[in-house]
Length: 265
Image (cartoon, rainbow, N blue to C red; front, side, top):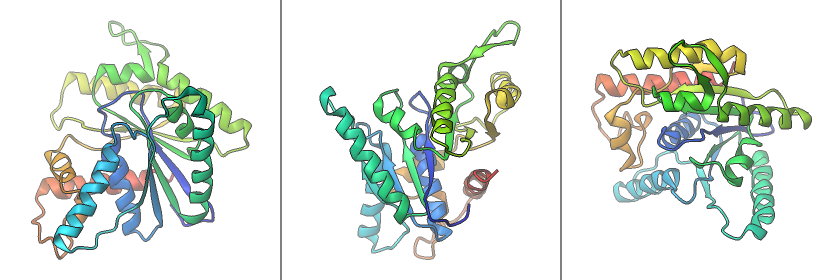
């Protein structure tokens, strides 16, 4: 990723909660900051607000320990309860995205775990779409409807259909082809028949449905533990923290590095 006039917009999206979108969003934002990019984040999952809590924990940790860690500029939106106000709310978010696109090199958008107008609006902004997926048949079904007895792919899943519609909208606007990445997340470190089935089929359908498959992040305790302090695995070697890096920490750091580099085709 290179610095340019308009921010590169990275949307973390999946029509399902619990796939680790906020963990990926935070780690990518910190990675880009460490590479001297100007980064803003937009939390459109404002009702749950996992990314916002992550950043609040980070700011509190820095205050408590008199530290200065790279922290992205942060905005949060919760869904509007009044349907009549939704068009104005979308316009407000669009105006913010337009402004941030001229002031930053990258904008990372975390989306709700359920489909609503904020979910839709976020995807319409994407230059890169990262879809975290676990080694679960439920997650796989969002991308493709598969006959599990024969292993044959029948039709695109509901989320793949949604992304296809977004691609058509972006193409009609003259936008570049959407860089869609399906990224393994919370993946067991153990070999299993279920995990092999999921990722073998994702590999098969990647070209058919127009995404690139990234190995992504393993299911590591360190990611969950660091959330409480607002830290990422990328912060642990900061001289003021004096944290010993275990093999798991180093492996997690490499996972984030690989994902960040995978964004550029």
